[in-house]
Length: 219
Image (cartoon, rainbow, N blue to C red; front, side, top):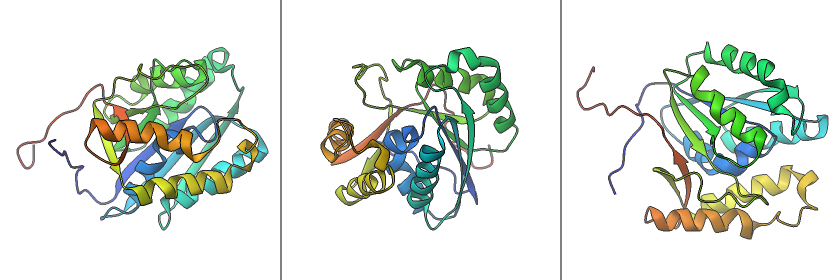
């Protein structure tokens, strides 16, 4: 499978969007680990639309751990959980403000996600980030929407990196330990299936709606 490489611009600026704390880490935590290990350096930002004080602290800790030794600037909007469509204008304003910064890569939930909060961010992302590479991630959930992403881009993950992703999630998101789906099998099972699709042990899958292929230096 042909491998496309990100520009070696220094630093690469990566923004991750999530409706809730743990969305980013579940959907793209392995990718953040891979980016943090990249040379040259990466500048990370994160935006989370809804939260509580406990969950916000968990998210700060988890995202900081994933991108270490790099740093991450986490912004939390404190909009209403499960009610983001009602807060459409406020969410649009937050994303518009973020889009004024020179991000190279934006990670976001996908527009066909069955959770209304996820899907709204996915729909609004390209209206705010018009000159950015947007990669849409997936989140396994009760709603049973696997298959709606139709991925066309993969980030291969080693078994060690997959295990590290789970260790960060489980260490920092103690509020989720009582969930019946919260275990390594859930997180790794989807990654194993996506790995099959790109000839890797594990992988995180994304959908890129628009990309340009730079074939000529300087253009």
